[in-house]
Amino acid sequence: MDENDALKTTLLAEDVEPVEVGPGILRRRLTATGYARAWLIDFAPGSRWPEVDVHDTEERYFVLSGEVIEGEERHPAGSYVVFAPGSRHRPRTETGARILGITLAGA
Image (cartoon, rainbow, N blue to C red):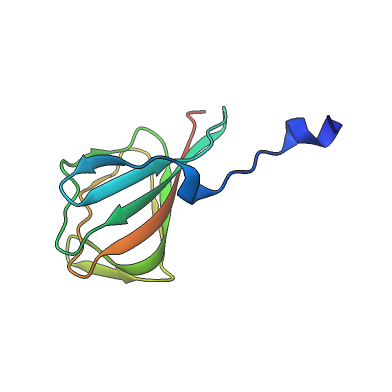
């Protein structure tokens, strides 16, 4: 085993079993560490996160495809959205979307 193996983890996201978190929403939890956790979420067209998401720590996501709607704001593919601790939101989509998210560990 190479000593660098302990410093890096690699996985193929499509190999992670998706879990349905709400109608039309599949989440893949990616490798987590003591510093952050990450996830890949696929939203079917017309889907909405099942409840208001409240953040104790910072959360951010990158829209890989489609469009995510937060309130009245539309975030197309290529958008990078950051939520501060204490923020809340309930994303939805009309077109469908795929996002890559990261939640930072508490300080």
